[in-house]
Image (tube, rainbow, N blue to C red):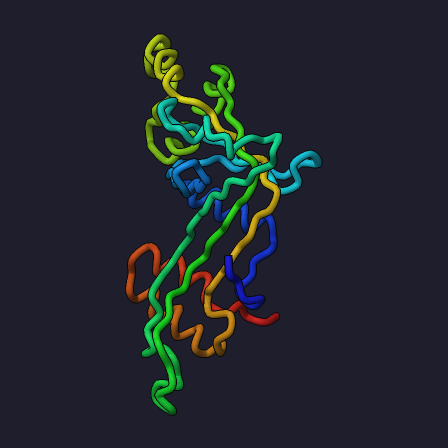
Length: 218
């Protein structure tokens, strides 16, 4: 991923937080017919001594060839890539002070992005899957007043569903972040941008406003 130094985000906790907040990742692998992408909700496990960049876990349909792909052989250390996209928003030139001075301004598009890399391995284990499905369900159901639980479905029904999915696990070898959030612009322009983004009102623009707005100096 091309990332100018002033847009690079290297803090692992910040990168993990984006992956947690935007869990639908685009899993990119190289297959016999070329590049392939699957879109999967992932869980990001914290860094440990064994896995200092963390571990991604998810599941795919058993009919999905990605888990059988030779290029995902852990022993060969062939990397898969998972792309997580955070907030993004169009930035109009109207928000730059120079528009009214020199006119030398152009539009741009801001975003926060993480690319996570590591060898993909299949986990064909019913207990592992049960634990993963329970964690994912509990997380996504938590905001509901009456959260649905895996145990609410008949046990034999869940057991049969687990037979048609396979777990995947990616111990991360590197995690790259690109935060293009107008860090290279004047603080006054960033304040104006943040106000304009909030006025726009959609959730992505409001989230970007929080990333663009300059932090007050102490």
